[in-house]
Image (cartoon, rainbow, N blue to C red; front, side):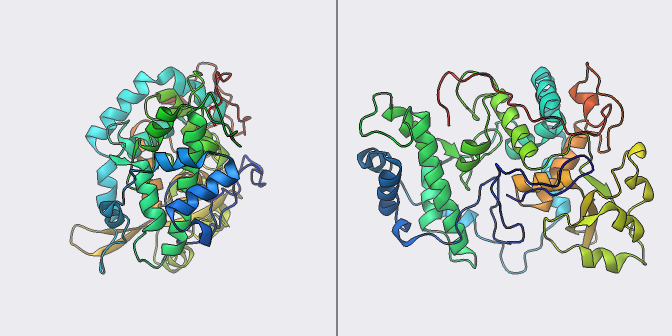
Amino acid sequence: MWISLLSACASNQPNPQLPQVNKNDPSAPIVNQIDSESAAPESSRSLGSLLAQISKTEGIPLATLEAGFADSKNLPQVRKLVMPGPPGFKKNWTAYRGRFIESVRIKAGTAFIEQNRQYLDQVERETGVPGTVIASIIGVETIYGRNMGSFKVKDVLSTLAFNYPDTPNRINREALFLDQLKQLILLCWTEAGGSLPAPSQNPAFKSNQFDRCLNQTSSYAGAIGLPQFMPGSIRHFAKDGDGDGIIDLRQSRPDAIASVAHFLRLHGWQPDMPIYFPITETEQNQAAIRRLADGLPDAKHTVQEFIDLGILDSRYGDLQAGGVAPQSKALIIDLPLINAQGNDEVRYVVGLENFVSIVQYNRSYFYAQSVAEFAQALGYKNASAIGELSPNRNVKRSSNKAAKPKKPPVKNVQKPKKANVN
């Protein structure tokens, strides 16, 4: 994850509950995952060794772990899917955007909001994360559950933990997926009624539920459910939105909605603030724009700096005009594309704190900008909200429309647990 920095309406101190991640590491996690060691320990470089280690440190019976992974498979197709593009491959923002901001997905997103309006409204009031942004993420990730992946999660993670392709970042990636494999085991153990550390005999443990959890389907990277959370993110950030005592990101829309909002809020989402601003590109500021677009998801500049350079219009530093406070942190986002004539171009925008929080969900500028623009297609107003919160605020009009920029307390949206879910 890449922890968000400053905003006009929030403290500049990182949340002490959040894992600290090297934002400048180009081989950092590809999707919402917590940090892991830079290299896998020797004792964990085989599946058998990892299971023995987990059994010893967590108290889970080794026989249970070995039975759960007795039929695990190496997946060559997954290894192919995580390979980088071929030599000469060019990223194309226009093509990427077109996959997500199109009529079928917009129609599905509109229906999702209508069907879940009451709960989206509630979560927005409690966390400050707009319902349209939550709906956008779930729509971009899985088209509201239509495409949650078809690989067994234990096979994906064991393949990528021990047989990652021979790429320059192989060591870091294997360590990442090794950690996620461990997180999956601990997640499934607790979901099946186990406890951590586990006694040698646990009458509450349900082995069939443990196996179902290990064998649930995921993406080719091991992401699970409607919002495509990695196992570590499920354990650390997922929420029981419907209050049934179970976190089910596959079937429960309230759980998925609450979890996305909780993740973004903990990772720096600034309520009632915009995500990005368009830039003014001129012959005079082109060199500065290109120099400042360093590709690092680190908002180390200010809106005022960009105004002074002529990159932003002065109204974007004015809260009354829908902008943000001049000292709000920002960065230049570069979006390479191929134009209609087949020539290379780059579109630039200014990313704000909320852009950085979305990048922490998935380390991709293309992804974050698609989420922002898809949310706009669903009714999100990409501007600051001025004025008192309306007691009848709803998802359609509350997305940056009738709210004073302030930082509401993060509330736990789940009801009292009936069972230990994580």
